Length: 286
Image 1 (cartoon, rainbow, N blue to C red):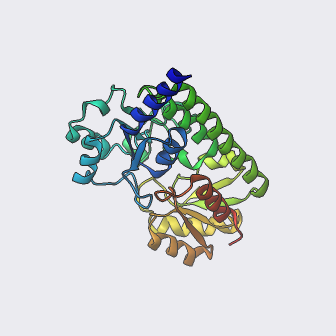
Image 2 (cartoon, one colour):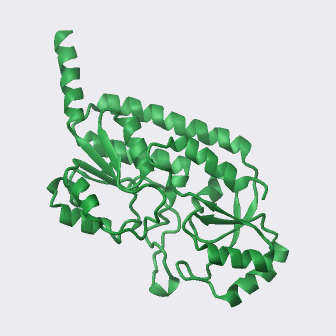
Image 3 (cartoon, rainbow, N blue to C red):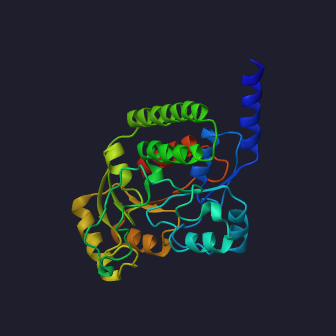
């Protein structure tokens, strides 16, 4: 009994001495659920567009002290995270090291492109990166993160227990929301919500972007406004950082309202509460 108690103490103490950095708040929430004793911080606050972030010295400093870096993957952070990892000089978290954790490894990806060229716009050929809005996909991401934590020599039995509890919580919220969310038709600004189509039987009829990542022309918006009379979308869904000027212009042309949705929780916000608020905001009657 004494040896067993001592072993648990040593494992717990070693966990307290390790730190995890995540790029997004939702992954910090996952880590806290899997290994509550770990120190974990998120680089982003949840209000930024993670495609376009500066590789700030503060980020470099935080990553330099990390034992593990957990990131979204699927090229979401490709414009800034590789530079931060390089500048940090932290060998533990470089690509190929055990402290380099791609949360998308086990995620069932959509929109993977085998034949890609730049004329297709701002797309991610390895798959749509906005999976963290999907509860089923976050169960898969949590599995990838658990595997990374195992490599940090944290008690694997306890990690597996916590993963099972977390997966059950995520699935229970998914089942609960499916009873509340009714199928609806929408226009969207970008493709941030596509993982939700299958999850909740939503129909995204058309996008306000003719080419992803390129501002639509007035001519294209006018064409969509005419088509919307037949399509009858309930509203336009847009990410929090989508250009309000374009959304207002389409609203003026088509007389269809829009809703700007946060794509990530804020630090220390419960992810399950965040997802419920997002889904109810998406499917409320405009």
